[in-house]
Amino acid sequence: MTLTKRPCYFLASVKKILLVVAVVLVYILHQDIWFWRSSYLVFGFIPIGLFYQGCFSVVAALLMWLLVTFAWPSHLEEEVERANPGEDEAR
Amino acid sequence: MIPAIVVFLYLAAVLYIGIFAFRRARGREEAEDYFLASRSLGPFVFLFSLFGTNMTAFAILGSSGHAFNNGIVTFGLMASSSGLVIPLTIFLIGTRVWALGKKYGFMTPVQMFRDRWECSHIGTLIFVVQAVLLVPYIIIGIMGGGTTLNTISGDLVPFWFGGAIVAMVVMSYVFFGGMRGTAWVNTFQTVLFLCFGAIALIVIGVGMGGFRSAAQGLQASPLSSLLTRERISPYYFFSYTFIPLSAIAFPHILIFCLTARKMSQFKKTVIFYPLCILAIWLPCVFLGVMANRVTDIPEIRQKQEARRVLATQGRNMAPEQRDELREKSGGDDVIMILLKRYAPLWLAGLLGAGIMAAVMASDSQILALSTMFTEDVFAFYGGKTRFGESVQVQTGRIFIILITLFAYAVALRAPETIFELAIQYAFSGYAALSPLLVAALFWRGSTKWGALAVTVWTALAVVAVAVLQAIVPAPAPGPATIVWAPGGLEVLSRTPGGTAVFGFMPVVPMVLISALLMIVVSLMTRKPAAATVAKYF
Image 1 (cartoon, chains in turn blue, red):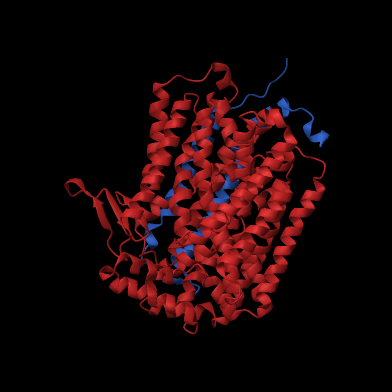
Image 2 (image 1 turned 45 degrees about the horizontal axis):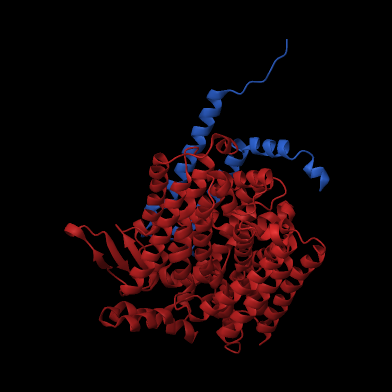
């Protein structure tokens, strides 16, 4: 008897939903209406609106890392490999 | 003059890189090698050249100029929203286009659309609309080059001559080096700018007596609203998140996605993209805002005075007078002015070269237009079969010369600031074309008639916005001029910065109606053959 590794569709769906929720959440965070009129200076020189959006960029990079780690479309790579076998070796 | 000499040396270095790439490719007169560097770019070059391709004069001069007049909101408007939307679209769309390009040999988006929807002339129409929308982007680069050289040389190099030099250098290395030369130059330029951006921030900060005192002085002054986002409405801010959708629809970005050797090279690009944007835009926006605290530079005081007069007396002025004041208050050259004032001569030259690096990103657009012309028109209509691949490459090179000359001629006459010109036409138009890619890659039911509807709508909408803005003059800062308000509902208005539809930028209805047209028209029309659809899903 051979054991085949089956993908867990429930976990895959939950993962996908969580990632979509994360993207939507980060998009909402970008709107940042809460610091709209504040001219408070973080560390005495960075306006809080600018500081917030700078931090947002770091959060966006973390979100991209999550997507690349947990939702990378590796099937596309496999399809290309099947269509052009041995291409890398030829280069 | 020393800074100008340093910039000229830099231009010579860039030219050499392009010619070096040409020598390396000598003997290989294949279209795929010239236009796509044989789909062989490594991870480092792929990340920095793709990013550098997106960082134009608009990012550097336009962002600091916009921040000078509108405050910190500039960063959230374009930079951080791009840091989210652009890598997301590269992740979702760029990877798929790369895989299809590898499998089926596509070199342009139109080739993919023609195959996906079994169409020919509709593809040609998409090419025409894409090409027309791409030209303003090329003009930005030439205008930025002219502005930079003019400022850094202390008016010794006039705008027309600076623009001509930049156009010549870009044209030469694209002409010789093709995609390989362009990618290498972009990588060199991006690294240069990332290094010098930080130095510029420190040098100017020290020169101004520290950012702490400048920021606190600004906070206590009547210009404190520049430290907030009060000058821009939340509707406008929300609208701007639609603009970065244009990035993946720009042919030069999509064509660049085809140059990666492996799909895994997208991983670093996707993750580091928001951080690269942060590294370049944050200093530019911050410096643009802080320039308002500089009191000992006459050019900056003149700009502030023009802005003040426009705000207080603009309502009673003729449109031409307002346009003149708007031009005078434009801040596209503030970074260069700050560098000239606070950096030592040799360093100002190096930093100017760094700025020039970003300004000259129009190379990819020129190459993309040439690729599209030779593949989507010349090759598609039989030129490649009749004359061979070598003639196809030579045709591409001639096209590069013609398009650069055309863009230069327009750049000399264009009255808009760099920022406005880019946003109003190219960005909004390409954002409205983005549903084409989504439909082609993710929806089996999409059809060529849906694609046609999207393309025609985009062209009409861009023309409508341009005509409206030409007919109705921009009002003075303050309330917008209402153009159409049936039953008291404000539908269409002319704002100081452009046009508003229900308070949103035109890009919002343009994208939404594009998507709707794609859905409705596709549902009503015949789908491509099952075998064709099966290639994509």
